[in-house]
Length: 224
Image: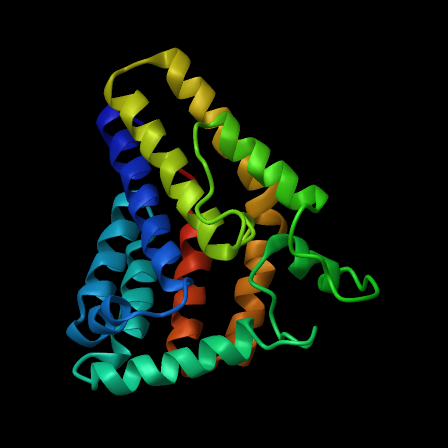
């Protein structure tokens, strides 16, 4: 693979993970509008193609995301907030899908009790890897840094840094950022996000979150 193609793929991954970070944060007007006007689906397709995804997979993923084109943005946003809260924010330890790596794995592994959200070995390691890469988690006192959207945002940052290093033809920096990406994906992202997405698909059929999960799985299956 030539340098230009490698840069294109890294940028595609960075942009795709940024889309996913927005998709899995609490839904706002911008996200709903992007689904209604079709820009989210178009951006997702472009990112996947740039990242090196199979064109057929990119087309089918984008087609699923276009299902809400021309819907009412206000109605869609209201529905998304209900679904998001039901899936990811139900209180009292009865959350169907915890949107935090540590808590999700706690349930996935059959551990007893209500999972802790802060200062767990997982969150501390995620925080360490972010800090070593020059990132400070947003709202770390109020929101665990191992949330699905924080981890996607971190992946976006890592791939953007890799793209910069590739563009500058800095072999040492390319090796360093590649190692950071591989470490974070191996020790964190791949350890729970695929299962999180499959669980979301099971519980959010015919909702945007099912399509978002399909996008995430497609992105994470692409090897840059």
